[in-house]
Image (cartoon, rainbow, N blue to C red):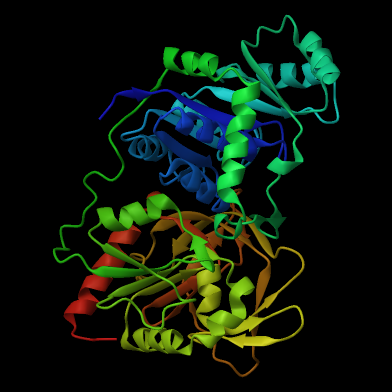
Length: 469
């Protein structure tokens, strides 16, 4: 394994400044130069990594210094850089925005310092000209520990606009600098949880080519790569080493629900499942009538099940298999959209009901505003399929739906004690029925790899019990 790699973190002054377009454009342009690109995303995001993977033909890993300790973040980065020529990290929100105050954990700035990776600052120039200089000066002097590779001014309106900005920036010793003109063809549609997922993006190949051309025409990529080659980022031993459980010999098969409805998975979570001895079988609850043959556990990630409510409800055969598996005691874990799918079903904005698995005795209703948003620290109040009582896991919660329970319905057991990033108690239960556990929280299992090994051990025990779905 290589000892270091040229790398860059694409950070912005605020959300919406064009980080994603710039990151995708750089990745695509590097790929066109026949470079193997290792993509990464700062923070708890699932949609941008999907675009990264489509462009780079390489899974994109989330790096978050709040959900994971710094040593783990370094290992996750190193693990994702195997066989790559260059690494590109897309930042989150504004450069210094994270949990807590200045340079808080979870921020792109904290990640840049953790990895010692240079930062390319992206500024939206559409509503400024000479004032950009004051903004850039503030960002570049705010934290002297951050190494800036350069500046990219996005949404430049005209040649005259560029001239004014260049003159204002003279004498600031920025080094590498680029100016990208406004182009409406580069906008990626959004919806309630962020950008449209890569599965639903029309004309993706054309968009990628346009982004690459946009970057190549208006930025000195040779100069940028030369700067990155001068100061490569050190790599360490991958996180997956030495995690395989000694108790697991037969490699239990874990079914991963993965399609347009269920597409929110941290890549490192899936890597940990395999590192802990599991074999993964991806399948589509939208299209397939049966669970994968020989499956011994199920993992339902989040996504947009609400956009596919009717089609999911129509596929009763696989819903019935999931319910039977739960009754037999198969380990089943669902988070956010996956948890919703394991409930009675969805109530849409028109009051229509779409019945789903019905394992948990709740209906799920979509709301117009988000119902929860933020980092979550989870303590297990009871031993479960995710670990022993008292263990701590970290993750994130963001959803627009809420639970609707009937007055006469029995309430399942709750085994999560949850706190936010500031240590305050949060009501976000982990519901348990038998060996089925569901919650709105997306857990990052690298924060507690023992949870995955426990889940796999439970899957192995289930298979040895002789039950068949």
